[in-house]
Structures are given as structure tokens and as C-alpha cells.
Length: 492
Image 1 (tube, rainbow, N blue to C red):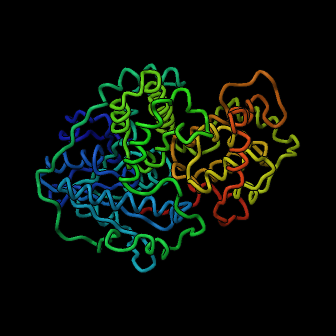
Image 2 (tube, helix red, strand yellow):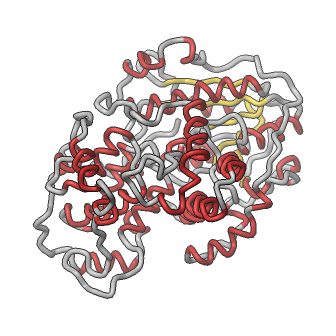
């Protein structure tokens, strides 16, 4: 456990609870810049990672160099994910330029390999500021860089309205979390951006930066060694403008009926669809809550939206913050794992092949409707996700296989996969409140029917259409891939 203290510039910052040191190195007074390395917090404004770097740079009289890299070999790399990330990165650079910051990017490919680029950039830095992400590749990459670099590394939480560190580390349930979280929200809802005191960095670099905005991003992505069978989302375009359009739609169309309509997957105006933009940090929770409040949709609708965005999303982030590996099977509640294990040998007459599941061609029309939303849109309505996750338990040969399959489908297909919120949602479908009745396969884990969708007016027709919609014919592996945390993914 790292016990280093924060430098005065960060310790005195009102946002200091967002920051934690990852190593015990001393600031390098002869550095050329403060390196701000972003992986998922891909926004130029309301970004505490950038603001922390600016504060540190101003204290040292140094500029900030923002760096974003995109590799070919992250787990489930595809046209869908690459195009979304690249669009966010293009707008990140433009936003940084508007703030007087240099932002350099690198797209890893056969013609432009840059081994150890973060370490090489850190070699010229006085310190490194990066984002505090509790899952997927971001956490272990940050820890490995901090362990190997000779300069201090500071991790900053940019994903949550209320930093998890200001809450007790002994909260065991959502009720206790809300009692701690709700009183803190007002204090963290306002922010002021830091302004750099120095001109943008224009000195030497250990590589030639890419400028994807000057070429054809689609052609660049097509040239990479990634999964080209999974195309970009049809409903969630990349970039800041698309995120702002989704936010405006949520505020003006979705929120006025949110409390009553949010569980109706057949309605286009029942869900905000913002989660992909949250996952990649194109939008932040403060900005979204301010837009929601300004829309004045009505007290009950705003309260329900806040409960979903802050009460559930940040609860899942808090859980992930406390877990070493929030995507692993052992994070599911012990009672649920035990009861599922008791029924692991039960016959599974509804078992399906991975090919049928991945392509949305199972015997379950409702499940296919859910899966095809993932395939086509890279996103799934939350009410459908609960049915989808529950049914996977009966479609796979064991509880562990069910968990691995759910995480694989979510993480490969969804723009909000690989995320504390979606892993938390899957964990909730595998546990939740214990049922009073013991059932085959599920034990005391409650099952879920499709009546909340099928009984809607036009629900049968909607499900039939959704289950037969055209989707990309993506590649199918022989078996569910091994957890990415076990594959030896290398340090950038």
C-alpha cells in the first residue's frame, strides 16, 4: 500500500479526495512537463485528471502534456470500440487546444510501433497524472507504470460525482451507501476549471504523434489488426457532438416521463442511452446532472434519474473501487454462488451453443431481441439486460460458464462493457434478493420473465421485430475467451 503524501498543489485542492499517489517517488524539478495520461476520461472539460495535472504544472512552472494512446491488442479490440474511442480522442485534442494544452496521440499499428511509450514520455516528465479506473486494463496498466517509472504517479477519479474516497470503506449495502452518498452530492456538484499558467508544450517528444483528424479515421481503423467483424454502433455515434445530442435528447424527451416510462423497453423515449459516453468519459456526471436539473422535468422524474445515475452507477463504482478484480466470478454474493453451485449438476434443457447466443439465434425470442440490440447498437436497455443476464444462467453448462459468457458478450459487444456499472449489473442479476423458493438450476437466485415487455401494448410485435432485426455476422470463437486479466496483457 502506497503511503506517500500529495504535493501541496494537490493536497490544497478542493478536489483532493479524488487524488491518490500510486508510488513514493519525488517530483522531478528538471522535468519538461507534467504528463497527463488519459485512457477513458476522454473529455477536455470537467475532467479532474486534467485539472489536477494543470495544478501540479502551475506549481512547478511547467506545461501539461496530455497523452492518449490507442493500441490494437486490448481485449476485444474492434472497429466498434476503436471508432468510438478515436472519435472521442479527436474531440479531446480539440478541446485541450482550446484550453491552451498540448494533446498528443498515438494509434498503435504495424507501421508505427512505439514500445513503452508511456514510460518514455514519463522519462521527461516531472510527474504523471492519470485516471483512477477500477477495472479492465486501466487499473493494472496504471499500477505497472507507477511501479516502473522514476517519477511520482497520481491517480485521479474522474468517473464519479462523489469520489469514493470520501465515503466509508466499510459500506456493505446500497442502503448504507445512499445514506453516505446523498448528503455529499451538493458539495461535489460544482466545479471550476484550472487554467494553465504556461503556454502549451512544444518541445521534443520521443515519437511522432498521430493526427487522426487530418485523415480518414475509418481507413485508419480498417488498416489495424483488430476485430473487423463488429462494426460501429448504429445508434451511438462517436465524439463530443453525438454525446451532447444524446444528452439534449435525454433532458428534453426522456426525462419528462422517466419515472413512469424507464422500464418500458419498447419505447424510444424511455432510456437516456448515455452509458457509452460515460464509460469513455466523453460526458461526466456533473455535467449531466446539471443538464437534467436545468431541464426541470419534475421532481419525481429528476429523483429517479439521479437514483439511476448516482445511486446505482456510483454504487457499482464504489464496489469496484473496493475489489481487486470487479469482473471476476468471485465478486458475486457468496450465498448466490453457493446456491448456484448446489444446482450446478442440474439438467439444462435450455442450454445453447455460444454461436447461437453470440448471434442472437437461440430458441428464446425475447433473449434474441436483447442480444440483437447489443449486436446492432452496442447498447441494451436496462430492463432487457436483467432478463438477458438471468437467462444466461440456464443457457450455459455451469454458473461459472454463465458468468464468463455474460461478461464476454457484454464486454465485446457493448460500448459500455468493461465497466464497473455493467459488471455490477451482471453481478446483481446473478444474486439480488434471495427467492423464498428453491428452483432447478437457479437455486434461490430469483428468475425473471419477459412479461414487463411482452405485456406492453404492442409488446409481442416489438419483441418479434427486435429478435429478427438485421445484425452483423460477427466472428465466433470456439469457446468463451479467458478472462483478459489472465492473458498477460503488457504494459504500454
